[in-house]
Length: 396
Image (cartoon, rainbow, N blue to C red; front, side):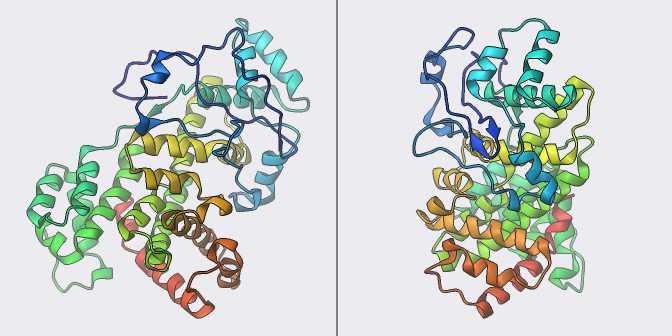
């Protein structure tokens, strides 16, 4: 993995990914590095702690990341069949072994033997995507300076409106997004504002940070040709999860600003994986069916998302919440992790649009011990639906 402003040179080493067969992990081979695999070298030792590699599905130890439950994936039964069927993704050892093959026909033949019944295109897609993640052969976008500075201002009790204006004014698209939200029906204004300082006064400093981050996520960090509808759906889910995590912050005793930020980026790994999907599809001149894309999300989005958050130097607590947002056992270890886990669950339930949302959320073990009942949760759900309305303008 490298950011777009870093040099491409890296050794072929890094975190592994699981090869999932019938919903179980293949046992990891001997940890010793074999031929064709670069050892853990000095470049790894020089890697700063802030970008420590997260655990990948076939990594042993306490930090191993579980696969996402299939029933939480978009795409329903089709996604489940890809996530837990007889074909899956490649492990670090398999990638190291296959990387020694120079002939593309030999590669296709070998991977085809490992995945009987799959088409040649699907087999190569799974191989190249696994390889890209394993060897970090993908680029992470650089977080715009305006977003980083606004996050710092929001956490500075001495920050003034003028400080925000100086950060925002050089960015015309961000100015337009903030002014559009300030003039929306959500704020019930009798007169439109045209300046960013008056818009900030109207909507408040916290809303400015949220609008800027949503705008950045959708229009600056990820613009993936051919996947606009899926990208919009993923960003919308992240926004709903952020609003829900923020609404739960007091109940979970988590910092409200961090709850929104962690909720907004909890599934950022899916956006990174979607970028890799686009690269692999162009390489192969083949379009993966949507259930296969969701299978890639299930296999990789949690560790890749944590990696992205560390790359952007997000606080350790936010990176941890991203890591545990599908892990009920570990989400309860920190208030922020609990808020983000439940925020994600609530966002999925809102998308289901049925009458059993409150009951299912309250039945989740992560909700145990919180001051939540059906009435309080229904009020919270209504507030989340309302709170996300103005953010549609910020998504661009």
